[in-house]
Image (cartoon, rainbow, N blue to C red):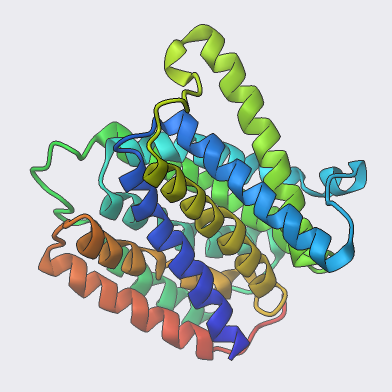
Amino acid sequence: MRRIGLPLGYSFCWGVGVTLTKIALTEITATTLLVIQLLSSVAFLAIACYLKTRQLPFSFRHLHRGFAGIFEPALAYMIGIFGVDMTTASNATLIGSSEVILTILLAAAFLGERLTRWKLVLAGVSFVGVLLLMLESSSGSDQTSLAGNLLVFVGTLFAVFYVLLSKKQIATDDPLQLTSSQQFVGLITTLLCFGVLSLLNSHYEVQATEISPQFWMLAIASGVMQYALAFLLYLTALQHVPVSQAAFYVALIPVFGVASAVLLIGEQPTIAQWLGGLLVIGSSYYANRLQPTAP
C-alpha cells in the first residue's frame, strides 16, 4: 500500500498545487507568492520536526545536508513560477511531466540504475502520453506563452538534478529532517537571489501589504501542499523504490493538475490531452508492478 499511496500523494500535491499557485498569481506577484509559500513550508516542517524530535532542523549539519534545496525548490521554482505566471496551469503540469523521461535516463547515467527493456517501453509510452497531453494544449489562448513554457521546462531540469542528489542522501537521512533542511536552504537561496534581483529591477520586490485575507490563506495552503507535503512524501517514497520507478508517478502530476484546472479554473483540455492522460496512468500502473532492478 505504501508503494502506491506515497507516490499518489506527492503526485496529487504537486498537481493540484500548481493549479492553486496559478489562482494565487491572479492577485499576488510571482516573487511574493514564492516567498510566502516557502516560508509557510519551512514553518510547517519546523513545527513537525520539533514535535517529533524536540529539535529544530536548522543547525549547520542539517543545512549542509540540505544543499540539494538549491536546485529545488530554489532554482526550479524561482524559474518555474514565472513560467506558470505566463502559461496555463495545464501547460505547466504537462511540461513538468517531462521530468519522467529525464529522470529515468539520468538515473541510469549517474546512479547506475539499470535501463531494462520494459522500463524503456513504459518510459516511451509515458512520453507519448505527455506529447499527446501537450498537443494543442490551450491553443489559441492568450495566456499561453512560449517563453513561459520554456521557463517551466528549465525549472524541470533543475528538479531532475535535485532528485538525483536526494536519492543518495535519503538512504541514510530521515525524510522529515532532510525535507526541512532542503526547504530552509531553498528559502535562503531564494531570498538572496530575489534580493539581488530587486536591486536591479523593482519587479522582483516582495510586496505583501495589499494581499486580501483569502489569498493569504490560499498562498499558505498551496505552500504547505506543494512544498512541505509533496517533498516529504516524495523523499519518503525514494526510500522504498528506485528513482526511475518513482519518476513514473511524477507523470501522474499532469493528470491531477489538468483535472484540478478543469474543476477550479475552467480550463478545457482537448481529446488528445485526455487520451494522453490515460497513457500516463497506464504506464505508471505497470511501472509499479515491475520488480526493482539492481545496478
